Length: 248
Image (cartoon, rainbow, N blue to C red; front, side, top):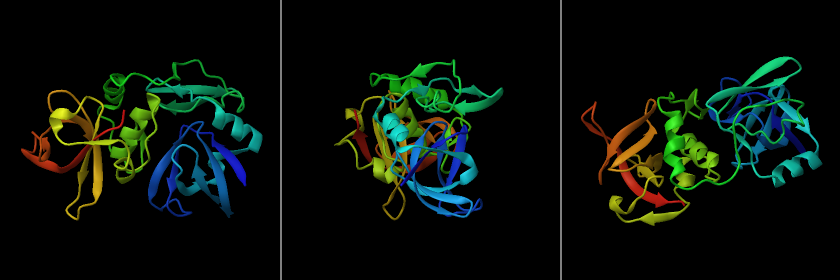
């Protein structure tokens, strides 16, 4: 088994070993992973935080020792708390997005002087964090303020506040406690929505007064009722409500 770390701000993870393959997620700077297989210029990996298997370009990773990997795994996460910032190394700047992992900065011989978040935050902080992503463009598989998808958005908001969510909406829907009514929800709870075939395909974060923040074209605010998300600009419901979950 080999071990590695992401050395760039954002790196695409592909469903197959090709740059034209579907981007299933991203690695952010400092995230660690196991290398399961090497095939030419590509490696099949399993991410530490998400337990997700995907392919990465070998030029976008740095191999590390098992002891360094295990040491990093045992540490409390230190995450960048600024929307966009940078680390420096060998006289160069490496831009990194909100939520990058900073535990291995010294190991990679980089320097960082921006804001850092480390400990679990009160549930009330979730909405404040969610607003940092407001108007970020939708990007399938994205996890950064420069492009993000629905489940990447909820995962990153929770991660920045010290809580772990799975990567996709259907997996996240398996976590937490189900609520019977919207009126029982609190800001920060997750609302899940399904497709016509009944599979969960969308998630957003509940706010006060029957509002929700979610990703639909961009990170945006919409109304929510017992039927689902209502887009006032389109004058129609766009997502059918399946369940609301209390994670915290």
